[in-house]
Structures are given as C-alpha cells and as structure tokens.
Length: 415
Image (cartoon, rainbow, N blue to C red; front, side):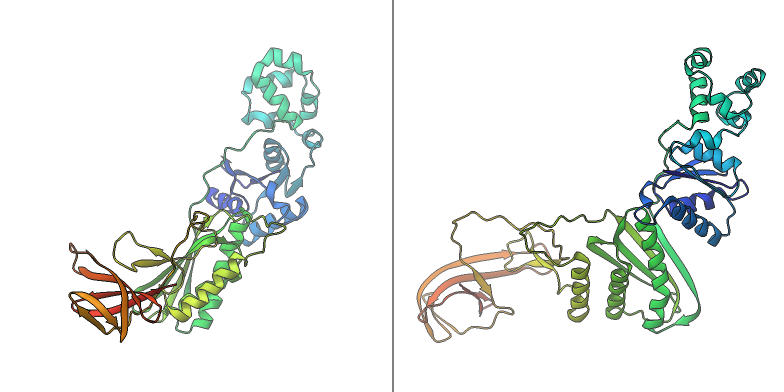
C-alpha cells in the first residue's frame, strides 16, 4: 500500500518530514507531491481508514492542508490525491473504477501533448474510455508511451518507489522558559522528547542503539552524556529510566536552559526462544538493572572484564556487558588449574635462603618453582617489573607470590 500527499501550497520539506515520520520509504515525486509506503503500518496502527486518520491528525498538528490518497498502486494514489479533495481510499482492484471519471488531460505529466490531442480527436475523453481501448492495437501504434498511459488509466503501473535515503539523525530540542535545577521536573521535559523520537523509530521499524543527552547550562557550558546499549531498545520507559540513572550519577553543575535528545537507530533484536532452553532476562530489563548497578557502584565497576594484550599480570578493562557475547570455547577433557586472585594482593612475610623462599607467613615451603621475571611498560611513564614464584606450603595450599622492590605479596591461590 502507498500513500500520496498533495499540497502545492505547502513547503516540500514539511511534506517530506510528515511522510518520513510514518515510513522510511519516501519518494520526493514532484513539487507538492510526496509518495510513501504504508505497507507495514497495519500491525502498528490498524486498517487503512485508521492509517489515513493518523496521517491526517499528524498533518493537522503540523498545520498542513493536503489531499491524501491511499492505494496499492503509487501512481493511482498520485492521480487521486491531485484531483480528489480530502482523503481517498482506493481498494485493490478498484483503481480503474475510481479514476474512470477523470479526463484524459490529467495524464499530461506522463505523456506528450501530441498524444493527448490525438486521444481527444479520437473522442477518448475520460480515463475509463482510455482503459477500455484494446491494448494490442494501442501499443502497436504508440509504443511504450501508449502502454504506460493504459496502465495509468487502469491503475496497474505497480512500480517501485524512488525512495530517498533514510534520515541519519533523530534529534529534538526544547528551550526552557526558566532555568531548571531539579532533576524530577527535568525528566518531565525529557520524557516527551524521548517518546516522540521512539515513536518515530517504531514507525520505521527501528530501535534506539545509542542516545545522547545534551544540556545547555546557565554558566554557558554544556553537559553532554552518551549511552550506548548492547541491544537496541524499543521501550521509551526503559530509555528514560537509563537517562534518569545517568543524571543521578552525573548531575549537571548548573541550572539548565535547554534540553537536546539525539538517538542513533539500530535494527531491533529478533529473538527466537527454544522450547527446552531456559529463558534469559529480557535485554531491556537487564540493561535497566545494569544501569542501577552502575549508579550505585560507579562507572568502570560494572560490565564484562576483558583481558588486555599485555604481559602485565591481572591487566584488564571493563567493557559493556552484552548477553550475546559468545563464550570462549574450551577443549573437552582438558584439565586446567583455576586461579583465585586476591584483590588487593595482601602483603606476605617471606623468608629467603639462598635466594629462594623457604617460608611464607610462618608456613614452610615444601616445593618452590621460579623465579619468573616479568616486566613491561618501560617505554611509558609507569614501567613495572616483578619476580614471581609458585610455592606449595606445609598447610597443603598452592600459592603464587611475587616481589616488587624487596616487598613480597600474596597474589592468589590455585584451586
């Protein structure tokens, strides 16, 4: 199904903006004419009558006066919108009946003047009379142009839209009448901006992959925060709560004069649950839980640890958690020691004889392996160097100890 808006007195940018709010497939057909696909709106809005009503309401809210036609054929929608006032709904198979009363000269945009005059000289006055002509003889005389006119009159062009590129930015801004300092009233300002943008994404079958909140402050500075989600979010309430937690953790340092919300779209996550596989938490709820933990524990303390490409022991960085991160495969039947790190590593009392440890915290060393000398970062401002030993103590434990600048530490225990 295709919808056509016809408003010759309206700015083309306003027509395109209205069409883009309902569909990512929009054709900038001609001055005052815009066609867009409404094929996917049935599940979101309802019947063609409800879709037409929703488009009409959006146009009225934007103070636009336009004719609207909905048809299974895009060029039929154009003809109906140009020559029928108000809203026109054309059922599939009824295109020729709807257009039949129009005069032949309405096809002047698709044919040269000489062909139109020839039809008038033949006594063909309406599109119904044109549609009734035998196709074989008409095409033999007028070629491809004649075939195109016949299909237009019968509502059978069925062409694809010359769609414009989808908009790359989804952004809304609101200037406040008075400087705002409190967080709760600020959320009432952010909420309608988020709801409007999320509704726009939903109409186009998209979700929010990243959100940027910009606040213009009274002290002439700007407070800007960007949140990126491992799984695109389609619920505006979840997105608003994420922004709330982030503002509570990183409050602006002055009163707020303006609010700007910018969304980066992404493809929604499609999940097929197995019949015999335990269900994992919903991604949106999981992200909300992670946001709460981040607000309590601070940034960099919540997520998935990832080892850094360095020989420095226990060097890692905390990445954003994603439930879709694949687990590292392990070879079946392989036997591995598990090592439990002590964080922070406690100081140890180590007695050394002949440059080898013989006791750790008053426990005799039965077996000692080492030393392993490791170092790195010598090309930076924070070089490091240490000497490691694996020791088995008289209490039955297997530990790793290390020394830095003549000080000993207990790094962890093998399980």
